[in-house]
Length: 370
Length: 215
Image (cartoon, rainbow over all chains, first blue to last red):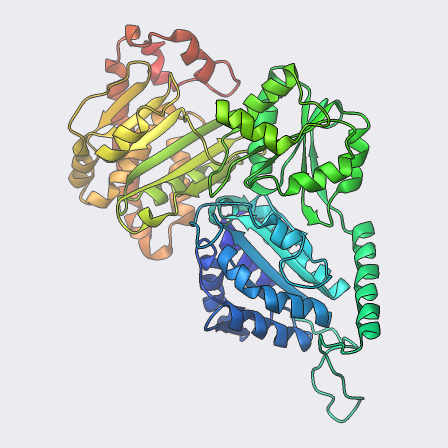
């Protein structure tokens, strides 16, 4: 299939359709609305379900219901809307049904603004909803990657009966890039042994619920989730490497912050500075192992994010204090330019932070004197 | 090779579509390209802009602080982007909508009366294509025929009858800009080193042959 110029949000929508999306429930919010807008036309055209719900709360609970029947279902929103969905996401996780979500993140907290941001990392990766569950979280940096990961989201969600959330910032959602769509997959309903899709008098009644009144039963269920999560960690880590072979400084950044860092890395390489980039594609499960290995042979890390250092903590956990992990971030919907990251590379090439210093404090101190 | 272009103007001047046409031409000639709009409240009236990055490698940042190339279709965009251009860069200004001359002498400012040219062709909506045509004099990586082919390939069928006029707008813009380039005296390029760094040192770079007088 030839490459076409696709806008991120519309590409995600079409990719979901081609992956066999049977039902979409959502509520409009910038900078994500094009997903809903596109599907409002495309889904009825194919005889599939599209509902603009009365709110994000309605949408996520419709997703919950459809997920229980075993069809491919998704919703999409942006930061404040995703916050509203958190209760439903926890119920979906607790019921062990597959559901796919997309968060095109914007500036926050609160109503914030509609500019690109990555400040929902912790909400997506480390919780959001209540209770012990671990969602799979994918973070594309380009339109092509968003398409590929959208398709993968459905496969992963079903394989692990898990919530799979794709987080991207407004940049990726609004950007146009040449990209290739996958072939249209026929809608295929798997004969799941858990789906509540009507027993038709042929089998035992199935019940799906997130209620486990007996704590001992709930503990068993929690352990089941945890065991599944261990399998996900062992099998589903994905990341992209740039110039890592001889790197002395490694930048870690996801999504747009990662690709902006790539520009800075290229410029620094042209100056002869040995710097590389690790761009996590799955932020949950996190590529801790490769970072741990890198920590054994590089001099320092620089984490760049469009937030105040949320993934930073996951990098620090993997590095285990062996080398300095420094930080550079932009907040509230600001996107860094490559020269800002290049300045950090120049500084680190001369002198690095002490291993035991706090990277966030050091960054704020640098900002204060700049 | 990497080139960044910012196109700015009022909503309704065809800023976003102008950028998309460049992006299509880049894609169809096998380059990597990103197009990103300002998607804020300015979409609903006021100023609009988009950034197009064209490269022959995987593009990093889709946004640029100091572009080597920009189009300002109105006065606010002229005032906003003139200070932001990279030294040695080229700014195409819609002369029809501005009331003062260039402030900087270390960039090339090419004035093109886009509105008047478009009206002469018979449709004032073509002013964005006039400006794109003018821009191509400073973007040798994309040829006028590439943009024509891109328009033909990607313009919705209901607009296909407009193709000849779009081609003419591109050509007229290009020709007008070429004449403006010929007027630029050699001495104006004060900062030769910067200019060379930007335009000459990388393979694939280099100004259009018609611009040789200024080098």
